[in-house]
Amino acid sequence: MANDYDDTVRRRSGWLIPIAVFVVTAALSALFLLFYLAPAPSSFIEERPTATTRDDPVHLSVNGLRLVVPANYLVFSSARSGGERREISLFTTYPDFKGYESGDSDAFTGNASDSPAIFMLIRSDTLNLTEQDRLDRIYLNYVVEPKGTPGPFGLTQYVFRDDSGYRGEDLFVGSIGDKPVVMRCVRFSESVPSPSCLRDLRLGKRAALSYRFKRAQLAHWQDIAVNIQILVHGFIQAARH
Image (cartoon, rainbow, N blue to C red; front, side, top):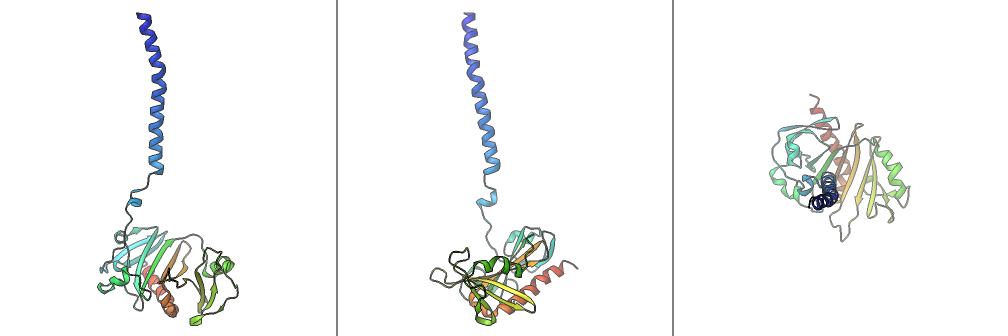
């Protein structure tokens, strides 16, 4: 009887150890996958734009660039708590370049082809490319005619090739003083009845500014370019006082 008992214990021990190893390994693997692959809480619930008429100053910074921005320019409520941010989304309107007011709800949430809304993004950026760099090194490699053609509103127009990542867009280049203004504009089409134009420019060495406006407002590109820079530099100057 004793020998039978010892044999049973040894047999059970023989398969208990592998089972225990399997269970521990599976548990560790599950924890590893949960930690590294599970989506962050923010990926389940993406923050939605929320306008405010508050104009109290909010102290923010992006990669060391400090700004003081009135709350009604900020698109997301989380940004109104201030502090360091990877990027800041902002809203204004043409031709006043003011923050959100109670009558701006259609511009803020709508998508009319002639909307006065201008959306800005201040983001961390260490590429340090000027607009001229972006034009010469990137965009001109993908256009049909590198010399361009005379375009509307004193601009030079380029057409992106259909085999490029910018297909369906036109490139417009102008200048203010000795500084280029480089804008990519989506073409009007049945699928895109309300296209926008986008401009990227540097804000120092560690941050960049993008802004977009409706292509129907392209006639005002100079006024928009000048006043957006005045507006954003005002936010930067306010943080220095």
